Figure (cartoon, rainbow, N blue to C red):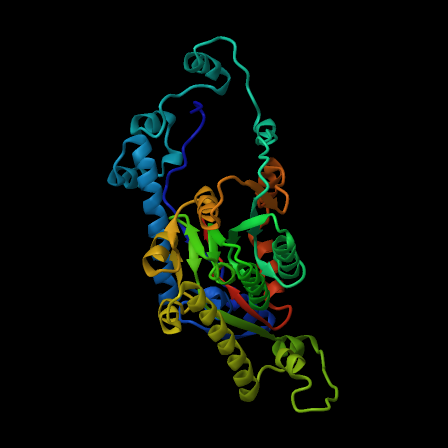
Length: 419
């Protein structure tokens, strides 16, 4: 470590923003429809703090992630979990470099410009070449001449119907149809990294995957950081599911949000009038501009509950269990990959290489080549894009705009910032 550097080791925290009081001030009420005690994605719009259910599930997966971190770091640095907790309580990122050296978090303190002397010892020579990560990323894999292919489809981001930067339902369905038509593809691996999103788009993707399976093409899922709610919806129908120990998954539940801007309308003096040919012709507009009446709320809640029935039936079908069991572990509850394996929503803990090996096994292939969909992007460019410079105020405005735009039915996990 550089003499002016530091190792950030201070434990984890999960923070959530609650918009209820802000929305009260501007005169907007979010009308909530949901299924699942633990489906807390909508809590920021009617609460000012965590519910007991959300606190329970958040603590459970945060403790699990922290435990995995301590085991990995402890094995590498020769430190016990008690020692690592004690170091975290000291907030090692604010300690002097000598303290971090003494604690065993680093092996030596050295200026970056002097690392050359260390590399000479490791390489055993004065002459060595260096390679930037940018150049390393462009090193091509040896091309396989095998005819049979294993397709690897990356599904990253929030699930939307027909536009967005994440998993766009209509585009993914087209890509899956293309994969299905390619007779050289003998197996499909889905790399899912998604908190969920549109319930309808999730169902469309699920159906397209089932069509591929109907052609005797095995489908294996590899879960990334998270594959929850809609992310689990599109995964549950696979033949085999891998998750990382710290993958956030589950969150099997549905919710709907309908903004009520009646108070805001009165504040700014905006009047609405019109005609309708039938009883519910203006249902969407009335719910937004006037607020739901009991009959409208019943209609919307029924639709959400029907969505939950469909979601849990898909999970039950894919996991080969009773729907009642899925409901008992559902309720919108978030699980870590380790717990997911225990309760049966995950088959095995492993990474994408394990998933590819399983797909090859299920397809009975001796030789194969990998085909990536979409084309693999430059990793350095993607890393740079991942840096989020958005302020809390900008994030609040974006989130309120997103939820207040229109009525929508979602399969989305709770939003949480883990640091």
